[in-house]
Length: 481
Image: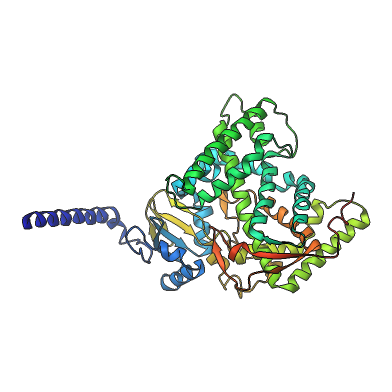
């Protein structure tokens, strides 16, 4: 028995010796010129995942920045990672040398959204998709959507009258409806009516542990994803047959219009169209809802800022009334204070704390080696909360955006070729909701205690329950009939 034990120990010794030798052969040639960034890899496999997700991300990042500097290594979600918190390094990864760092997501996320979605690709296919998505979401394309988005606002606000709402849930409903409008246009097919329930299942599974067990949220999400694909393929088939180019008809029509021009070459398949529709709706409503929830929180806590925003909106409302017209795109361009509130919320809340990239080969970054296959995480939250770029970063101060921030220090929608193509639509729907909301309601917090929860984006505790109190102004008295 003892000889067997000795043999096993000897084999283990040989195994680990071989691993060390392989490591030396792979990385030894780099040691004279470059080295891995400083940092801790934590426990085997688990790494520092529990530390990251059991505390405020600011605390996790700041402790390591103080100990190791702006570039440090760690191990989260089963992957060796390098985190970067300097604007210069972030620009290298996202812009100037972006071809060396491909976008990457955990396989479970890719499975739920769809492998052909724009988020998971580089090169020619990504460029083509981004061009198409931007064609339907650039200011020139969405300026004609003001009236339709406004109707969504006017439909949802009366249901809040003198009630208590869960802000995050209500904002998700609103942002989802806007996303559906942006993708499918104003003509909704009957098949699309059940999509909202399927998306709810998808969202719960996306934010859960990827355990494909009976009854698990992940298993339900996979089933919902299959039904969603089937529903979308029916809609795509119908619209392909009845395609007729028209302005403002949504992203789906843009996809199909591109296919009309490329019918003989490189036509997008139904699965490619479906994956990208699912991905765009998913991206368009979740983050926007989280940002809107934070805006209401900040306005509640800063009454003087709320008063300034309301005054701006009342002046616009009075002009609209005098000129006997509707709210227009040009009116939203005059909402300077409101726009600064949105920018400061994007900075302060930093809903997108970081993004994932993966080194496609061994890369040297500011004197450190990033091995091929390692994840690279530009830390937007750390940059947005750096006092060198934003003095008193914990203070909510929209006036700081009277002057444009330094380059690469404000990246709420990412940066480079993979930046969010729907940023202008997100800002437009926020402006329109806030215009009517401040003219119609005031709100009081139900929870006395402040707190943050991560679902997975940071949002106020409990989704921010608010008691909505109607102002004397009638919701519709400034709308031209």
